[in-house]
Length: 476
Image 1 (cartoon, one colour):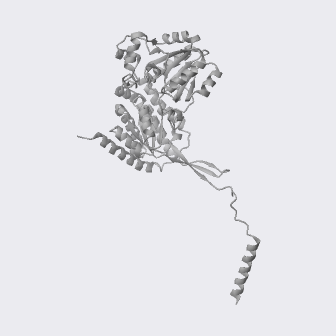
Image 2: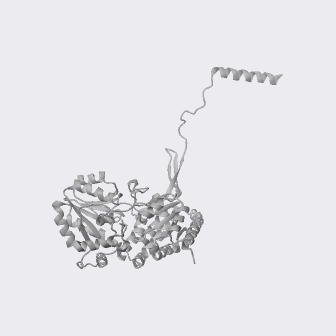
Image 3: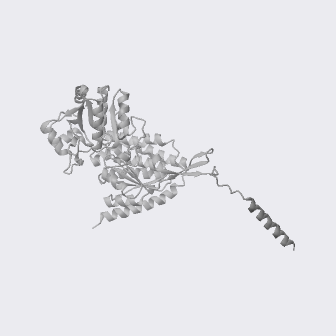
């Protein structure tokens, strides 16, 4: 009988030791060599984007391969184009006027925690930003996505061998367990955590510096001045992208009473189906587990699959299912994060009420993450921007695509920080700039009053007298 937990712990230690040896070799590479390696990995990953996407869907059952392919391209080509011009190795800057040098120092061996919802894309993205900053990385994959993540790392290791770099610079655990992951986090230098709240909390509790992200429970407000048809099109495109597996996808749509009928009509015309009565109760029955947490069986599933699970019939063209809600809280399933084709629908009197409701929804599981708004009123947009506890306010764009940098100029990223309010160490879209430190060399330029103290007159006389006496004694 094999104790898998002990095997996993030992594997974590061994992989980190091997990564440190490989890192010593990688440290000899200059910026040009590092960029060549990372660019080749981006190209290879892009060429395998479709195959890896299909493998991920086949193994996990989550999402759509067409959208996972797009995420793989985001993680490879788009991330590379963003980080390509960045200087990350050696001397970064020399300020001759202030006499300060800035030198990049890699974090070291990074522990990369990978979720099952975005497995191959997150692995590619983390390799790209880690190696660009001069680090090694060891992955702890979600057990249900082990095969596709391992295939991704194997592809990357082939590139490293071709470039004469030890393949252990990037590695993945083959026995992922809770105990092994805990050990990996303990013996690494930095943790890059993407996943559920419990895993992120464990990362921050490990004693190792960590960059983790919180849950997303993203409200979207369709304000009365918005182009409603365009807004609904973007919301549905975002919510159905990879069947809602991106944490930045919209979870609750808020609209004003004055435009609610039009918003609802547009939703129905584009494949929205409003649940009522027994149908709604049956869907609620499959949404959560006994403890009130999201049922993993519904994650990343399309509307028809969820309907079959709940044993209800819905129109063939249904893309998302909605529930009209008035309350928010832990006992209201539709008011929480739902990484699938389910969404809450709220009607309010005005934007001020929408503002308050958005805050309640964020407090119910999405503080610090993201909020979306569709509006032509800049004053309202600014009010939301000034008062909402989020790290990203996404304006007139699909929340999923906007948050990860596909439809906005935000840094392309699959790890979205939630700031202190969301329990994260950063509010940024995490990229390679977060994975190295800067050593500053500072030359002294000010005397700050430490010149030699003036000698008193009487001290001068004594000194001169002593010198004269000594000279006389020598002459005797």
